[in-house]
Amino acid sequence: MDALTRLPLVTVRGLRVAYDETTVLDGVDLDLHPGEMVALLGASGSGKSTLMRSLTGFAPITGGTARVAGHDVTNLRRGELRQLRAGVGQVFQQFNLIPRLSVLTNVLTGTLHSAGPINLVGGFRSEHRKRAMELLDRVGIAHKAKDPARSLSGGQQQRVAIARALMQQPRVILADEPVASLDPKLADSVLELLRDIATRDGIPVLVSLHVLPLALRHTDRIIGLRHGEMLVSAPTGALDADKLSVLYDDEEAHDDDHRA
Ligand SMILES: Nc1ncnc2c1ncn2[C@@H]1O[C@H](COP(=O)(O)OP(=O)(O)OP(=O)(O)O)[C@@H](O)[C@H]1O
Image 1 (cartoon, rainbow, N blue to C red):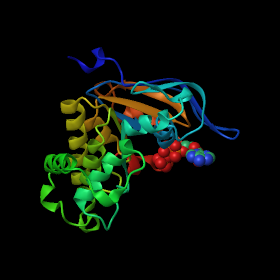
Image 2: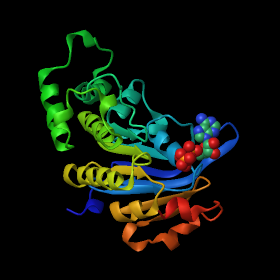
Image 3: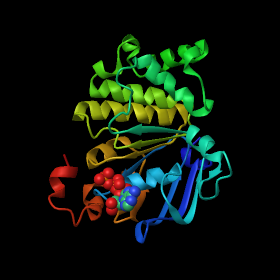
Image 4: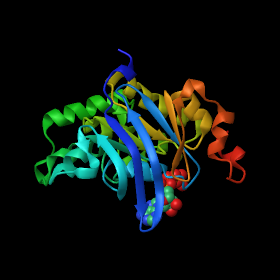
């Protein structure tokens, strides 16, 4: 079935976020359907991270609506914030692994989102260990399972972080600049992995990127922000670097930064 014919897992309409008197997002609309990977583009400070944070209740929404995996983010019931965050896998630029712990244990920490307060002394359940190993196999680093996370390369660490996000059995994945610290070849392979997850597992992925060609190569749709406003929302196939340059018009030397 075509992704767009299925109900969206994220629906955002007219979203507004303000810190004190300063509006940083204004009138943003977004749908994320099962199976698709959507790029979030915009110059530094345009509001990409704020949009991602708002979807998990980390930013002050002052207007509009946001539904994420069945939760009304603007009107969460008591205890619902934990459920919301358990359903959203997050991937970050700096991987956010625990460096001294093994790769396997880092992946297993993905189960903690839904566990509530727990006692780690008893260790992780064997079915979770089995699943964590399967996920490490899927992301191509099962052979590193026992190594400390700090001993891995950046690309390998990001694969561990993606396996950790999958361990949560997320409904949605938000990846905030996941390849900004990687060289171009590794960036392509990590984005291919994320797109494979979107396509094969049906988990929609929202990925913020700085490099336009990566967005054009790896995503189904592009949302573009400029000064907190949504200037672009279109299928990737309908866009090119020229059409997207409107997002960076007032940025100095944007050519070097975004077209690489
Ligand atoms: N906690 C906060 N308090 C006040 N202002 C904030 C806060 N977080 C973000 N902002 C402001 O909101 C605007 C958008 O920031 P945001 O981090 O979302 O941009 P971005 O597009 O992700 O940038 P980058 O590409 O550099 O990560 C910026 O002007 C920033 O200064």
